[in-house]
Image (tube, rainbow, N blue to C red; front, side, top):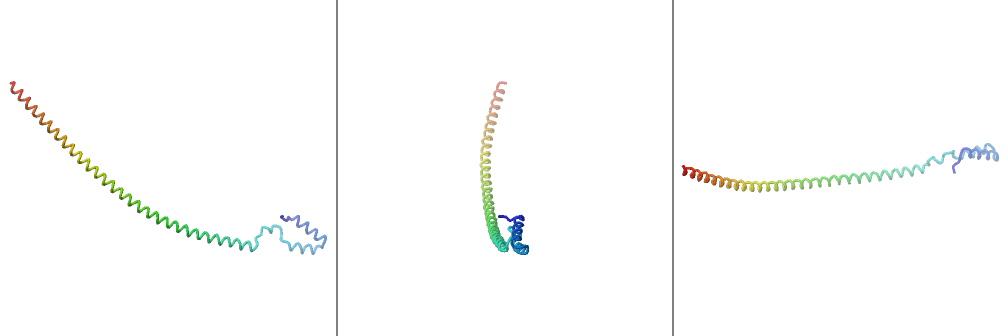
Length: 143
């Protein structure tokens, strides 16, 4: 129950009526003023300080733990980055080797095709030369 100023005045008036002004004033001065329910006692302040100290300790421990976790993550990230670089380098070499191998195979195939076409053209040229000679021979014999 909250004590109001009106309730305090009524109490004072009643005390004054029964015991007199001096006794009523003395008794009222021993009562805490209105609103003292909101005032912290020293034990409340000590309890709050204790809670703050406990929170500070917990925060420091959490901060240390977080720093440790961050350091561990940095180390793990560095390790993973090194592994990834190694994998990328190996993949690069593998691609280069496969590309070089395929390029060499294509060069060999192209060389074979060029030789085949060259031989075909040479054969065709020889055939055409023989046909021209035969045709020239026929024409000369008719003259």
